[in-house]
Image (cartoon, rainbow, N blue to C red; front, side, top):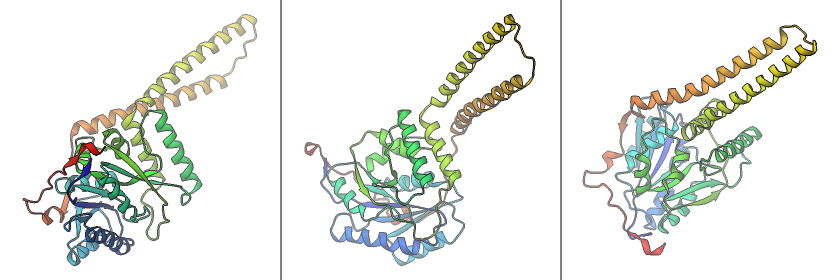
Length: 338
């Protein structure tokens, strides 16, 4: 499935309060893109698309300045903060009509941008999806490494096909992005959806670099929210776990009742309220947890049926870079090569 024409590439970069890193990361991406152009691996009108996810600093001002200096830089500005997943979806959605290939990468460039050259080579070999995968997690804290491994293990047990140690650094073909855009969830779990698309995919490994400026945009609160999105978006196992736990507690209660009857017959009953109160607190807490889990699913259903937009774009300098006559022509594929 090798491509017969030079592809148009768009590099999508989600940004949230990235004023400290953009002056460094933007020129690096520009040099990589220029090198690809010089070697005729991508078309001269390929772009870098920054998606400003409601930043509160000068991120959009810097994107605007970059655009004025070089038309290779383009940008989207959200009306408010919608989250990184929304920023990724917006960038891919806007670029999809124009780009043959789309690479997504974080603005801090902790993911090795030099891997983009290898991704393009794999795309020429016919792979629609190329995952950038970390070869180690030595730059993470012990807590983050342990919780990440636990998350991947748990998702695997739920039957969710994730790529371990892969974040949002990947290349996708236009048809793969088109398929992804057909998923209409309000809060899509992208890392779980993409492996389910079924297109030819491969992995490239790299060593993640420490953050050189700014702060992480994934504190513990967002990590927990991200993990819950993955679990609740792809499995009803938590509800089943509540069912099994409830049955187990009922079975235990019957055994305790049987034991109490036996003790009563033997005349060895000790009156008191401690055991009763402990049981009530335990069962009350379990009921609250069970109700909360079910409420999460009901709440997500409520959110989905409203069909509100995933994001609202306030400014777009990417689409205007192409005339109406410039949407991409799908690449010709040689199916005999795979």
